[in-house]
Image 1 (tube, rainbow, N blue to C red):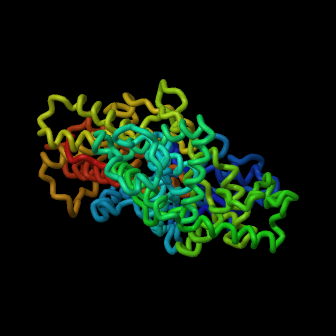
Image 2 (cartoon, rainbow, N blue to C red):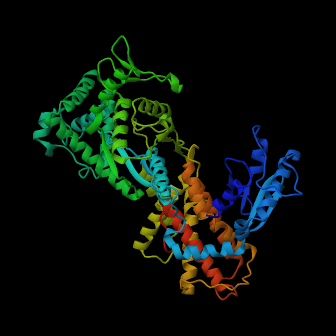
Image 3 (cartoon, rainbow, N blue to C red):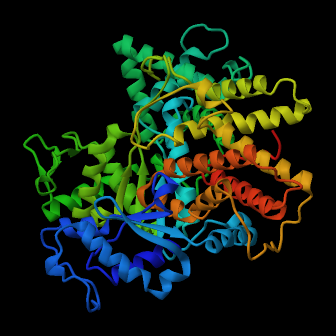
Length: 604
């Protein structure tokens, strides 16, 4: 990789332990830039030196500012054989930045590399022999998936995809919280409010013997998850309004834990509806899990870690019998790991599950894509896992993300039933795309397929282009626009490249360009963007930032469209090169969108 070559040479010239090489915001300042001279000069512990100083060069002791130091570095770089192969020009700018311009043949060769690698262009092996476990999108089965799950899913899947492109072995998993009081409320809601005759409240034994007297989603023409969602809201309201009902619901929890046959039958029935609905939503999103952990299978195991922690002296028992952590050395507040009545808490289950993950995945790192409100809880889990020897705290990463809302909407509450469902949002985006495409020559079947791809892509891209930790208000009209920084804009640009190549009937193989190939500014601008694709992917995975890939793709699309609008491609003097450039842009856009989980329609 070109960036690595430059960094390697720089490290042989300066004493900097780290050398950052970045992309300038403007091509005027080269293809790469580094502030290494300024960083070393600003370090109070610096030992400024240049390897193999030459006679006549200024002594390091005489250097007065970072620009002088940068000049020395540049002089050394210019004579280095590895740099001279790939770099056309190096110069110092401002207070000590060093800017690099790549040679034209290096830029042009990137087109041959794209043609050779095609859908594999951009991948690398920086994560080779490393395994990551990424938990994402763990929807509770007592309600339909809503906007709160959407950013989790889109973010988790994109980071997992990008990691795989960098050579990491990735296992995607989720936790199905399929037990407890929330599920009991749903069970009660179904038992009481789904009876067909709406008559007197029936007990669970009667239900078991007369199940055909209860409604199904099909009876009400509802999606299975919406059916569940409505019953959960009704069950919750009933639970909170009547102490007698509360006792009955809590008894469902007790009976379930006692593995009562009838209670488990009701439990499986209501969860079955929920899973059917979730599956419909997740299929549209292109979701993937390699492992689904079901809470009921491991929740009891957490208590053994409480006993172990007490024996090791990392937990302490309070006077009332509750067990609490001791996390002072981690500068974290303590938390209860077992109540005074001996019941476990979420953290107890998290300890058991983390141990299961470490044993099952043999992962170098485990990641949790979970909202920011869980930040403290996750830090506490990680600290206790280290205390128990489950893993080192640096082995665990909480990938938080900002809150997401709809523009103009207030705060949502699944308990109150005023949520925005994922499918509703996807349907709305699809409908708006279909309206934009009204009048096209596509058949209804083609139009439906393309509008689904573009609508879903629009929603995903609008989320991913925002920095992961930033809060966002989703704007449906902005998301489906074919202008500006949007998914449809990138998909349309990709379709444009396909159209050009179809008209040319261009054979995508063995590009041959003249040695004296002349390139204009628009062509060079596209090439300078294309060559950075692999490096952008690697930066995105190191920083867990899919938005960096979005920014790159948007920049590339803008540059290509500027080239397209100002240059003839077919029947031009540079036709073969320009067709190769068009192919390269289309392939990179497809590859990049795929990593974001976004499909690329062949035509639009």
